Image (cartoon, rainbow, N blue to C red):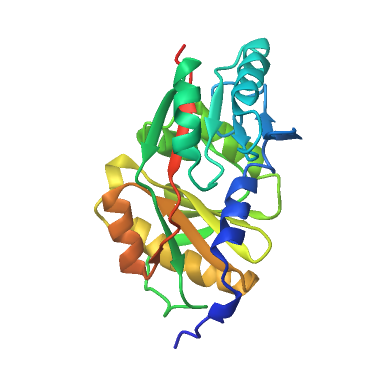
Length: 258
């Protein structure tokens, strides 16, 4: 029987702060007067490795955007800016971003949280275990999702951090599905939920996510959360037991096209 988490501990703003810090372990962060800027020249095409956040939107936003553009242009990297979940930031920043050549994409991602400590163990004939090395079958799996090498780079960088747990579902020693969980203070973030294109529709991701919930509960009492804008994935997460969180903040990213 599941034990409910103490809801008085849950804080949406703290979760969003952790979301903004989830990049820290696989790329280099520099704090600035306007916010923070991430850079990893080993993976220049990775958006998550190379982007900025304008956190102080009460400052000189036009100058902040100009500095971000100059920084990434100097590094021969496409300038990219992610949301900081500040109130009204889209309304404030969008005209300034567009005036400097940015394209702004607003997505409909849903944040979801698992509301209890454990769930009943799901039956599975497949082997599920933690992955400590990115092998060729995992690279093949990631590529079937039309993810580029940047996704493999991020996982390779992340896997060196003991707070990052990459789980894989195997059949006949071939990895068919993966999911990761990054353990932070009080909140843990699920990502990288991918099933090999040839093996979809067999409930492998459901089995893996069910296993991950129990796995996570055995290593920490953190809240477990994720986000997605894929309706099929959201349906799967709801089936496992995740519930939508209302954050009342826009999710967006901006970039200058090559």
